[in-house]
Length: 314
Image (cartoon, rainbow, N blue to C red; front, side, top):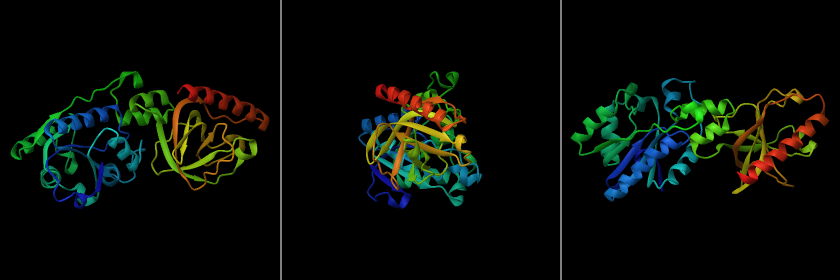
């Protein structure tokens, strides 16, 4: 898959393409539906498929300070999109100047002049251009004049998550924030994941016999609610069952909120400075303040045992 950042990186001889546009945060099952449709239509026409997305998130530029928690950083989103068979991803730097482009300017500059779109595939609520003035009706009108079709896909995917609420990034963020990883993972179609660099912490886990990777997560990451989780820690391409703690370590009167992962039954791991991924399978319990180190160790042993059992079948 080709990856471009900005219109200037698109090859000059790029031919016709089928395009879909969106933030696609998390690339959840609703996003997968629309991206798969774009790939399918491109193959039917013998052209290439392109996903257009933005960085940073548009809300951070339009309304500074309102950046939503991210379900996947940009490189991870590209990996997930590539796995769906897309030929190219175009990341458009979302600037104040770019946000002021009219729908007509955006359509001409990106879809016609740069990507030579023969078809645009979108959901019914798609909006584009300054102040989100463009909708699918305007997109279809502009397309007719430019020999570019528009296909609107019903994205109303539902399940048990959120009591049957349509799948969306907003729903997923809410479920993650509540610690409902079963629900979030249903929407995503895979375990929710955060990434970051392993940094040195207080090293209490090592002293207690459970050395943890203290992960300094990517800014704006969607961190689950405080508690203990079963999941996996991936480092250097190896995916290891893990017991994961999110919170402030109240037994030690901590104040900083951290994400720490203990790679179960692994000895001698040196992960400092590595970029790692932590995947959350399921919530085990809430964060507690224990009266003694002994009581904490008993509960940690129980957590690790349960996490081991769950990840063996997960």
